[in-house]
Length: 147
Length: 165
Image (cartoon, rainbow over all chains, first blue to last red; front, side, top):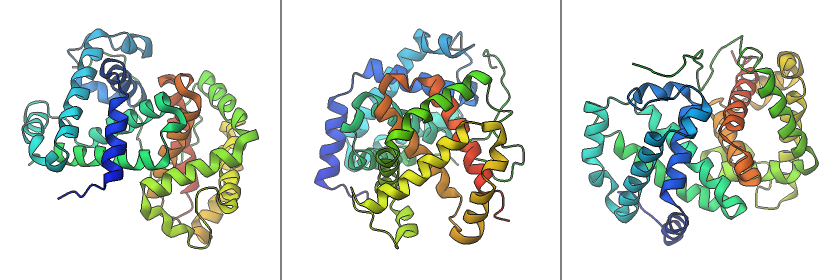
């Protein structure tokens, strides 16, 4: 069972309260596809991913980014049981989408950096540590149903 | 299956790559971008360096084990001077990335034989350097700059680990 301190809960809630999911979702996912181009292998049906500009302007990527952020909000609202909250999503990613679970960490690193760029120095080391702990629990839950 | 342009693949973590000089991975534009960013960090090397280290030790507490000999409380002069050393080394190397193997030879020896920091920690610091750059540069740290910087820091870390075994 993951133990969250009050400070960690407050930091993570505060960060989420400042996020525009459409904006952050699009930036995070497109950044992942640009910085780690091999992740594009999972987006064959998403249209033009030819270069950084195409990726950043791709509406299907933007829409999917929002979907990812909405899922993270579910984890936020169920912080004490992320494992079960994500059980179905884990099965989806392993059996249908067949995503290498190593990629979850890449996306979560990109999200951390997008939020740092947005919040500036308000994204303190303590905020970063709390947020990365949250993301590592999410990543672990997503990887649980791989057999 | 892929509809995107195929680019040479790269590993996000290097182990023993003797071609990890950054020379083949980075375009001329990317090298200029990297040098420009680090040039701006030189005057604030202590602040930036201390922040990178503090982020790393707060987010990844295992890394604190290498700093038992220093005062690593926020704002400590040790953190600032140690952070400054790291930032200046990265900045210096960025001025001539093609010569990375030569420039970093003394640091390779230091890390392999004296410090013996487990190289898995290098990517933790690299990530925190990217976070620090993003926090200070905002939108200017766009995906293209991020990609270039990640490649450069990965190459730097790989070269640093080359003499380990």
